[in-house]
Image (cartoon, rainbow over all chains, first blue to last red; front, side, top):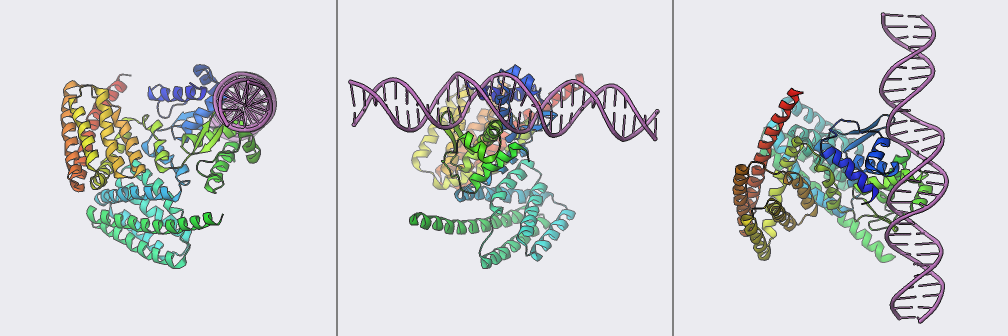
Length: 237
Length: 237
DNA sequence: TGAAACATAGTTGTCATACGAATTTGATGA
DNA sequence: TCATCAAATTCGTATGACAACTATGTTTCA
């Protein structure tokens, strides 16, 4: 077994066996090197790997700590990498959204209170009045994240966040298409909010499902054009 | 910005900008150090982070390569860490399963062929005849993974795999409980298979939902006893 | 007495160098 | 032409040194 594996599994075992619990500080790098029998470089590489996965957090000058090990945090560690997925992968993820977002909407419909409905309505007012892409994107994100937060499952919220972050990054180049998309999108948002306000899980779920389907339609449409573009450029080389 | 961040963002940018594509070999560590202006140690830490997240793969003596960047692979990188989640987190994940597995079953019902149904039926025969925990666990896993594979979305399969891996690790200590669980579990499996064989997405989905709910019931039951045990031990300290 | 400033020890961050281990490549020879 | 071996390339690991930051205890001053 390589030194890196030794360090990685050693650290993981310390947590899995309960010797280190969420929030605990790890022994110093020097101590761990002796304990595990690896050099500081290899140990640090292992620590970085666990940090990338959301298991450890390192503070300069202080030490490394076991994270709270919340499911939402571990899922959130994917956010660094989903942005690298090619378009084909985005469609797979959109299908996941098509299951998860309606579920979140249904749960939210059963739990939402009047104040939050009011807040969401205000967000939609802003969205509909907005022309700026950045602002629109941020408000849209806030709207959907609020809904999944109300649903009450942090892991679900985090997962939806990660999945949405990918589609969110795309900007529709054609101005006419963008306007059409915004029209459909605004209507979809209102439909979801109506379902929530009526405390009707089925209506909210159906509206959320249609909303994601709408997104999927556009992603697919522009994916196709992109693929065509790639093909033609490939032919020219 | 720290040297590690420089290296990390530099590498990520190389991939995001398309200068490095899936399958490509990265420049040697020495070259990258010069390009990015960081030491080899910092660069290697960055490479390890991306490797942990499933973006890069390193081969001793050969070089580091960009992975295929499949959504399923990125999601699969969570498998190293979900095993560290405390019980409370497992319940959050089980709720996700409660949405995803029925969806997979519904999709599978629409696509499955006779040969696969035959194969799954054979697996269930083995499961029902099995007394060994390990064997049972492995076959159970195979049954459910086959179904999500038939569903045709690799990201969905990978996600279900990750989520299931956690609940799978638990062994019911009480023999009577274990026998009762197995009874319900076997019946649940047959119900799912009936839905698939009938090419009935609704039936398959409902059966899968009930099956996960069953799991959730047991996880919750033993979580409660564990929490009580922790509380009492906490009182004694 | 209280608080601010400082000094100190401990810890992580970064770099440089060296050499071992695995792979790849090219030369050599039959 | 193919097999074999040697060299070059590349990653893996270890070590030492110092900078940057944090935490803690001490001193100093109002």
